[in-house]
Image (cartoon, rainbow, N blue to C red; front, top):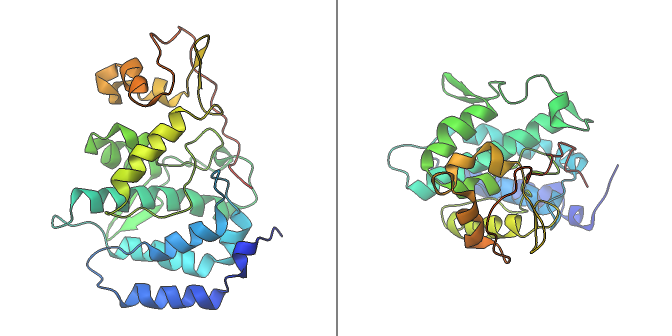
Length: 240
């Protein structure tokens, strides 16, 4: 089994975090346990130690249940709701992998995008439900660079949980990092080859003006996107 210095933090330490987590007010979700799991098991480049997450699975499942039991309400701020649903999406993707581990590709699972995997009271949600029916309704194109579907071509999973305090800064950083990451997009004076995210969700970016959106963040400005200017998406697992 893979090991890491990060796992010198004992299960007891995480139990203390969980105790504090449960002691806080329950009207809003607390993401501190998810934050610790990410710190322990996700590298700076976004690779995940899924076996490590499995070692911490009691706490992970406790966090997952807490999301179900503390859904957003009308009193929550936009930032609180956005952080909740992004963390929900990312943690669901991780849970799907560890529940079926070992796998090499999320698409090996049975209908991973439409499984009603996440429950809030009597309603169940799939990854597609959260992405298309909830997150995209925020009219926030940068969400495409902060949600992670356990794949190599996906925007990297950050080793921190999102909160109302950090979500806006994280959206900006993750968008800029993704666009300027040569493993995700090739943007030079001589070549433009973009992630298929820009093809699939074209209308989400400046009303379909992908070039304009790219130029808001790219270190190299582009004039247009070639006809075949998209890279094939790599669905291989984003594993350490």
